[in-house]
Length: 120
Ligand SMILES: [Zn+2]
Image 1 (cartoon, rainbow, N blue to C red):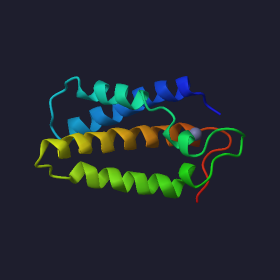
Image 2 (cartoon, rainbow, N blue to C red):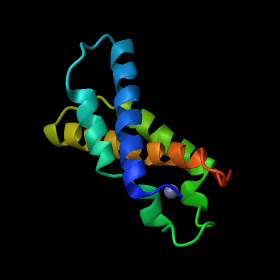
Image 3 (cartoon, protein in one colour):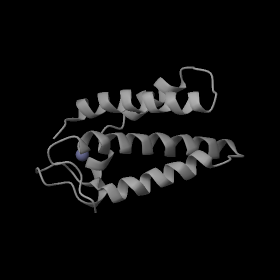
């Protein structure tokens, strides 16, 4: 099991890299928003472990599954495509994208451990 500090480090680098790639594809100029999003994701290193605490080696169930990761990715896609009008909507969009990225980065790190992730 990876510890919270390891997840935080992985979240920072993974979310910063993916955000930079997405921004570059969209033609956005490089700025501090990618590392800022990585830093925010690093502050949420263990979201799946809040739902399924790592109290034993077989704690990974539905909220650590490939199925749930797919649902989170779809929710993030919908949030990414959300054409916000109001300031609160922009804040909600950023919170959803950052939380989703932190969640998926945690699962990506867990996937590369010997226990990996269950399908369901
Ligand atoms: Zn975990």
